[in-house]
Structure formats: C-alpha cells, structure tokens
Length: 197
Image (cartoon, rainbow, N blue to C red; front, side):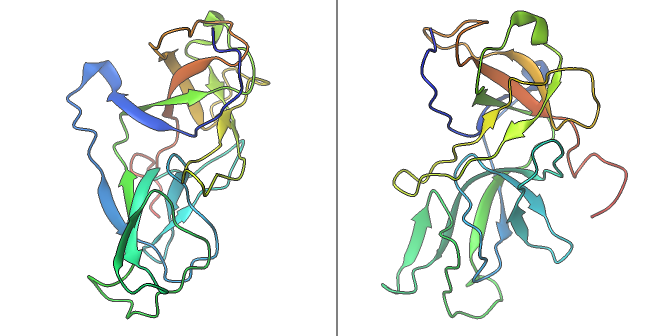
C-alpha cells in the first residue's frame, strides 16, 4: 500500500502499446546561466530560442519531454560535470557554442509512458482520465523532482496535460491507495501538436 507521500516527478518506464523502448534520451542545449533549477523527472519545454526550459505549468503544459540529467563544466572546479539536475543560475563562463554549452538530457518520445505518484488517492475509474500536475521544488540533495499528479480533478477535459494510462506495477501499490503511483503520458506533446514552436 502506497501510504506515504514521496513524490518523485516523472520517471520513464515504457512506451504505449508495448512499443520498443530503449529508455533513450536526446540532448538539448540549456542556456548558460539559466535561472531556474531543473531536476530529474521535471517536465521541460523547447523555447523558441532553441533551448530547453523547465515547464512550470500545472493545468496546462507545453511539454517537449522529461528531464533526466545534464552535463556542463563546473564553474568552480573546472571539470565536466554530469548531474541529475541543473543548478539554477549556473554560469560556466564558456562560449555558447557546441560542444561547450550546458546540455540537458530529455526523454522526448511522444509515446513515452511515465511513472508518477499522485498527491492523493486515485481510483481505478480514473483510468483513461486527464489530470493536472502539482509543481513542487525539487531536492538538490538527490537531484530529483518532487512533482506529482493532482488527485483533485481527473476528468475528460482535453487541455489537462496528463492522461492516466495504467497503474504502476510495483509491490504494495494498488488503485485507491492513499498516494497511488500511476502511469501517465502527455496529452499535448510539442512534437505532435500541429502548431510549431
């Protein structure tokens, strides 16, 4: 029984319809000095400037994918750092040209399915419903997101960002638990919407 609230953002676990899944990611530039922290499991969007940013939406998102880490030159130590999260306002002082600029790792497959904990109980009748995301500051200790699925409004509203597609198959997790862990996909992915970025 998932009786404890310990939100961990969105973790990629599979693809829809049992599609082939390598758990791979693409790399995209993060603006040097970007002022918002991005944690493993946070939703990111592609800005019109061609760099990724944290998507801070709740009832609506414009997701390009889910952030699963980054690499950048540590400004204090001088070596190349692989990290689970982007520390806000990190300025490397390096040129903004490849391969020196900060790079974020993003699971951007529109068919990707993610595991996420809800902030309350999710009944089996919510399977196929659309829901919102609860944005909470991540933890720099573990580099992890603390976002969750909102249990308050699960319905057919097409603009809600997440679709519940299943129950996470993990020990002690069941429909109706106090903080149910479910599987979700994005409703309005930037790669599948007809409007360009």
